[in-house]
Length: 262
Image (cartoon, rainbow, N blue to C red; front, side, top):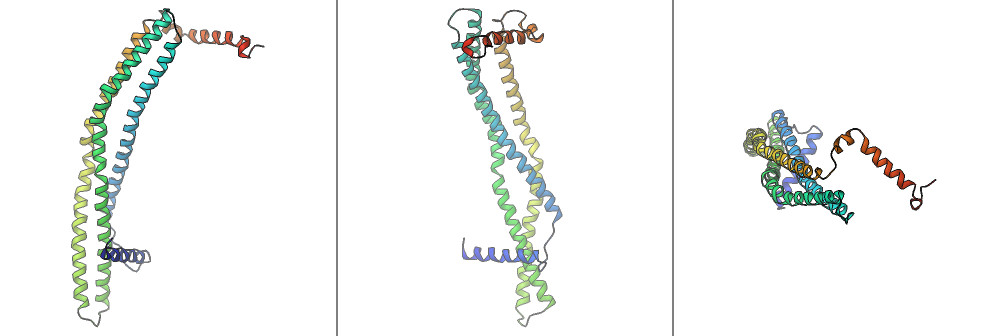
């Protein structure tokens, strides 16, 4: 920071302190406060959207990879040509295909149509926040200059040059502040209002890709079901499969090597 910048920071800190103690009048701009609050909410929601959109892709990758590992393990249980072994092998082929399709058909399009547009939108926030911070500093300068000018009017100085100089500083500070303030008042609402048309295509693409992933998963798992005995769904709905599982568990409990026999 330059010496001039350092002095400005010190002066602004002093002005802020005097405003808190009521020695310097603080400008209240309710219109800007409302627009700034809308913008900060928009920023918060967009950053959250970016985080969750990335988490969704990571979760889909993790889901596909976990399915592949489960299928490989289950397939390893069988070393015969039974129907169960055929079903396990079919399940492994299905999830392997889903895993590869996730990387090929979901990853790149999702990045291009969802993550990158959201990321680009988020990349604007730091620059906008710098502009808002600069506006706030210019407001402090404006309040300080106005206070000095008013004090010289209320209590004229023996130095006749002080009032004209203070008046010029006040006018200059006012022009700079009002220009930045007006720009933000015009552009912040435009930015916030553009969020829907900007994010709509990404939202549509995300829904389509989610639907496609779910449909392909359903189709692949449907192909595996043909290796199961007919009526398996009805048995599950009737609770018969739960009974079968409990029966097998009971047989395990009766094995002395399980340490559970009574």
